[in-house]
Length: 204
Image 1: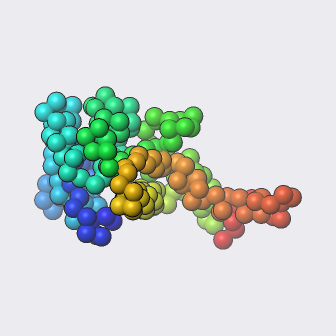
Image 2 (image 1 turned 135 degrees about the horizontal axis):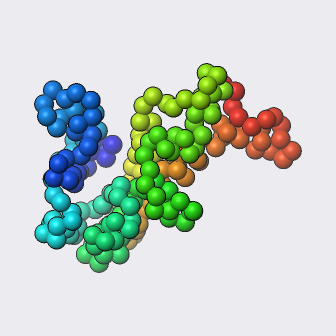
């Protein structure tokens, strides 16, 4: 999204490449259709962040960028020396976006997550059951895309604040909490009121 808006995006991949490079049947090795859609407009570098030299290479980039976005758990980033406190010492104005499975203040903080888990945790299959008669997943990576859109908006808000104040910040965008908010109206409906005006759930 940000690359579409004109940002210079540098994607950091492991030496073997992003796993989405091998999703489906690629025409050329490491260049699946999924990867080409999701990585369009981005430049890539492939490094092993567990190696000190690789981490140092990232840290050399930090003073030159406006923002850093990550989908790695915070504990792992801290072990690598790439947590917010370490990064902002090199660039106090940086907007540091952390996309995680669950919010750091919640009971599941630090747990890994992916699209299907968050579809289940936010009870999306129950919403579909009302329409189809059986619980089912949305047959696409909808959560990744919805949360990605929320993350892009949050990052742009952070960059706007940075431009106005010269101050950076850390922004956390958790998948579960983002989706719980996203589907709350459909789950609650008449139960929003006290007393309720109808049973919970949106019978679309």
